[in-house]
Length: 118
Ligand SMILES: [Zn+2]
Image 1: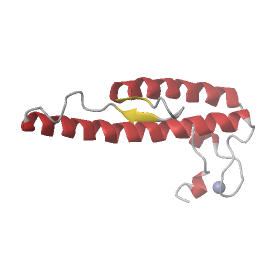
Image 2: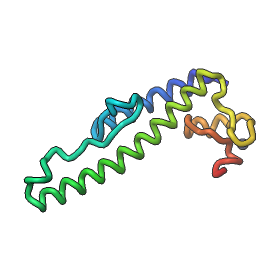
Image 3: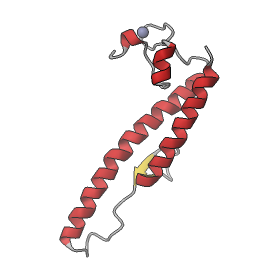
């Protein structure tokens, strides 16, 4: 299998995800590879309650998006690790090669079509 093709796709998606993550979060300074949603910028103790409610709502929205992006980024990072260790493109359930069409659709796939929901 031509893993360099999928590696390019993975690296491109990783770059896009990291760019998107920077709009809703920031890198956790204590844990490399971990991201945190950007906290509300206002001091909740002194601010107008309606303003606080708005900020909290916005923060929760950012939090949800951040979690989703981070999960996908982790999948991409794992796939890149598998490329480096030559285990890329193997189904984690049956150990058979994953269909190239499936990898084309999702280069971070860890299962073949048969074990899609497994
Ligand atoms: Zn399988």
